[in-house]
Length: 630
Image (cartoon, rainbow, N blue to C red; front, top):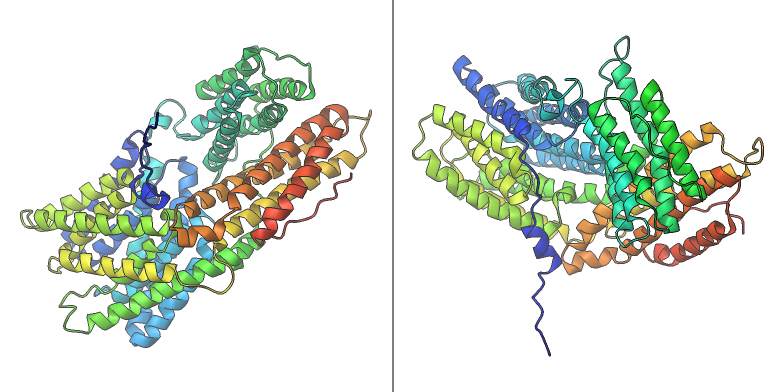
């Protein structure tokens, strides 16, 4: 009997309605409430309202970047974008004061080109590029009586205040043990839990998803341990111990991946050891005796050896320091100047420059009215053009809906709230809501709209909800047009750039393992420890770049069909690269045990490399070559 199926939403619309889930980050909510509002109140009481508005804007932008993670990682995640924002504010102020509309538009367009290229490097660089652009627009267009250097210092003070709150205030993770660690222990323990879950799933349909979850856990722990060391000298034993525990998880992850590749179901005993290690990390205590798995195959012997190594590392607190990604200035420069950086830089430059030119023209016309905030249009375009905030149509729809909601809400509140106290309280409330609102772009836009409109009124300007709605809709139209323009080179440069980086990392990992198989050995088997340390680092980079490519591919798949078609086949390449890295890991484990790469492994590697050529060439990727012998 025929049964009608439920209608499926098109991908671009489904993404628009999707929101992140999770517990309320109360510590971030507290920091948000104590940042922009109190800063603004102090400035108003001191008679420096304009500088207080700048500081509150900086605190708001830092609050958007105040995502879950360790305290140490927040130094770079919040600090670098703040420095870029202050630089943009300084440059925009002096350019706005000393140049005319035409020259200023050219300057802002060039800033957009540079900031767009920088944004292709990674998430922190993307946040820095955003604040550079927002700072430039605000500096050039916001009518403030203060000189540029004072504005820049106020901006740094606002972002620095939130960073200070992030470093000084306790969090749920830090209250259960050493105050210095607020997310690191849980992140490292999560790696051991992910290893155990992968071992439980070996031989079943859930193994692929569990392997991806292990990669995500390792990425999260890598980020949590990144940043400045909390102490380097006498009392750094806890620091060294935590790094040793992370390093000890790498061979366990390698053995678990090799077992998943083999696909033979394991006994429940195999996952008991990693779970006890996870409990030891969380409790900051010794592991005690660990149950040994069967040693009936190379990957199980590798798992047993990794458990013994982990127990020793936990007890002695010694291990490698492998949490830092092996990416130098040259890699970052290649990302900024590569296909992704060029394409994104051109789109950002066109959106930012065009919106600045149109805004200045409207500002001088009678239609625009008396509000002196033409900088809103280019600043809005900055957020709309960013692909890491979602697919293009999703960003536009959410931005429009969020702005309308926020502007109407503010119009109602502004009619009844006392000034300036009520508006300052509204700024504080909005700052507290930002960490929760970041789960959906429309909600974040609504909260930010209320906060910005409140800051404008505190600064002495009239209520501007209608103007905010009009400028946002105009910015949406500009970004939609520019987003569909044909640029020099191929479309989908962001996806291709991520896949190129992932393929380079995968091939570098494979080449190293193949080189290991040719290295001389004592006794005919085993791998030198120095080779293993390098191998684990290369393995981490391969899986991490693949995860980043997967994220870019998922976003591209949720674009309108006219844009999504340019990256068709990318998912197939990513899948083959993942299988290649999994097979390389299995080869490495077999090599450690026997001193050579097995025939089955070589045949599978050769088949995967051959499979990659077709879809890789169709996407225009230049796949590296490896010294794989037949």
